[in-house]
Image (tube, rainbow, N blue to C red; front, side, top):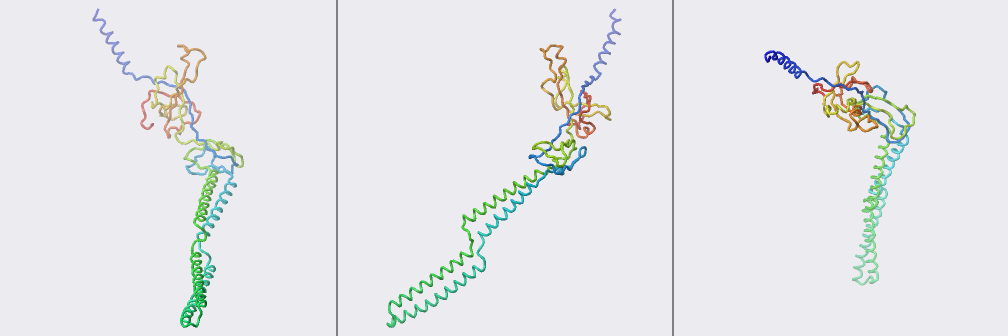
Length: 328
């Protein structure tokens, strides 16, 4: 009896071993392709002067995408530039010397004062000699001394005027205030240029022009997108996992997306698992109602593979695939 059971036992053992060697079946979930668009608008409202990109084309980083009318801003820049010139002219006038004809006139006055000093000195010497011989009175001698002192004072005054004319016209406080006006005018220019530059919007990176929302000559409110860009690698795979299978998915886990018309599976990695269910029955959970719960999961594909997908395209996502080292 025991001998007859050995073939059956061997058969069962072989079947069990075969079952252990079989790989687990992959689990498939339905989903779709979603995009992370970059909306580009302007900080302030204005009339759209030009739209330099077209929907469906690729714009290079740094290229002009659109421009608003900047007549007012350009006028502010011109006004600020004029303000700098005016303020700098005041500084130059205060720190500069007098004009050459004015200095020449002062020098002529100094030469006249010097000649008067020489004459009064000679007259004083003569009065002193004659006073010793008694031919000149003491009053005449004192008059000659006073005339000499007066002429020397006039010469000193003329020399001081020449020195003053060679220096700056304005006082230190005036020059400091004028230079502060130059700094303020330069700051005004920087602000005006920044406001003007905001009317010209360039592409922050190379990307596909996914959509344009306005045409030239239309009025665009502040903060409203004019262009939507789709940078490389911004496609993501969104699929839904039942509550019973939630333990099978983990962040960083490799998956594959399959779609109609795709030449090959698209490798991706899970990057987000929603902490809340997408559909919640309006009754207390039970074993039956829990089967209706699904959780949103998002996976990111590499830029090269995502070029084969399109926003809104239905996909089937498969778990349990071999990790692709190219997808990180």
